[in-house]
Image (tube, rainbow, N blue to C red; front, side, top):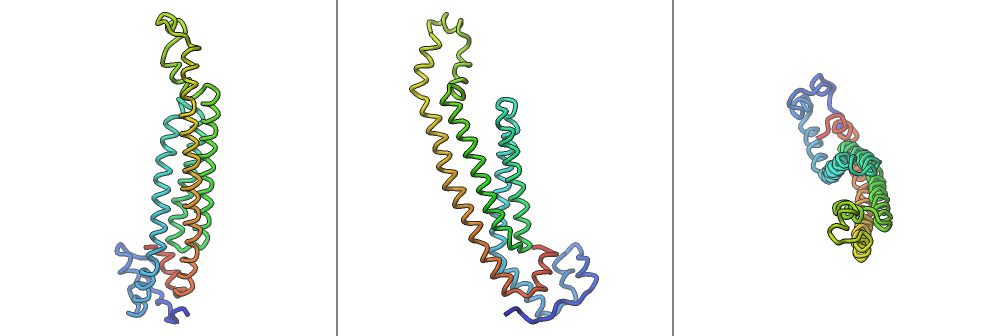
Length: 222
C-alpha cells in the first residue's frame, strides 16, 4: 500500500523552487516526507537508467541523421533517410524525458520507435542492394573513377571487360547490406523488447509510491 503520509504543505518554496531545487522544494516538509522522497528516488533508479539508454539512443541516431544530411549532395536518397532518422532521434529524446516523469506509455513508444528505425535501415539497405545488383553503387563509382571510355581504350582497357571483372565481386555489397539487414532485425528487435518489457518497472513504481511524491518528482524531475 502507498505511504499514507500527507502531502507537503503548500509554501512559496515548493511552488517556485529556487536555485538549489532540492533544498528549496523540500522546505517546510517533515523528516518523514523528505525521507519518502529520497526512498522514491532510490526506487526510481532503474527508470532513470532506462531514460539514460533512450537518451543515448537519441544522441547516436541524431549523429547518423546529421551524417545523412551531409551526404545529400552526393546521394539524394540520404535526404529522406536523414529525415526519418531525425524523427527517430527526436522521439527517443522526448520519451527519455517522459520516462523521468514516469510516463507509463513511454516504454511502448520507445519500442515502436525501434521498429520504425529498423524499417528505415532495412528499406535503405534493400534499395542499395537493388542499385548494386543493377550496375550502380560501388560499380558505378569504380567505373567513374577509371575515366572515360576513350581514356580506357588508350590504356588498353575495355569498359565491358572491366564490368565483367566487377561482376565477380558484385556479391560483396549485397552481402554487406544483407548483413546490415540481419543485424538490424536482431539488434533493433532486442531493443524494442527491452523497452517494452520495462513497462512493469514504472507500473510497480507508481503502485507503491505515494501519489504526492510522484507529482512532486513530475514537477521537479531528478
